[in-house]
Length: 248
Ligand code: 16G
Image (cartoon, rainbow, N blue to C red):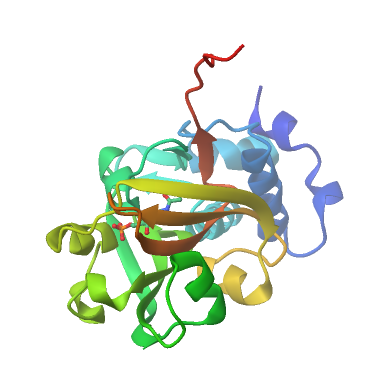
């Protein structure tokens, strides 16, 4: 099926300049999986002829998609629909490990990295007494320079020498002090990103996402981590391997 058949009549998609309508139509096609993850798009000039717009219009639409992280340009190879990340829901791995396993480069921008007194919510979740010290790590997490998730972690202060002990990876820092979690409880639910979160992730407010809350525990049952991870719905597939239970 050609791209023009796939996205339909641009006039009916939305208002605004032509490149923007093409951008929105392609974005829709990617989100609806009509353009498969990691598939190659035709060359710009072919798209232009197929849809009946100028090459500049195609270029601008693809630029906008690249900025949103929905397509990726590979030097000399063309433009590809960005691969969705398959994240296992049953492994106690870190963001850094998840991305490294997929050959993606990882970086984070700090929104906050500070010590403070535990809030009532953290005290309940981490099993701490009021007044205890916690370290907070709030980050935008990127894979190949595309913002993928917002992450808000709290760790009881006793498990790390200071907040600056966490550089790239929280789990690496915890491992260094022998306090990496060995068990975790997770809860997940659908969210819609608010204005502030959407801006940090470079997407539009109201887009769907997934919130995963993780409570990580040490061998002795002490809670060492409480993290809320907000994942972009358009970039992740969550997978889990299920086995038939003993009690049938
Ligand atoms: C993952 C964990 C998060 C953990 C982080 C550590 C999920 C749902 N969440 O994002 O709880 O704090 O990895 O990553 O998997 P880091 O070691 O790369 O900082």
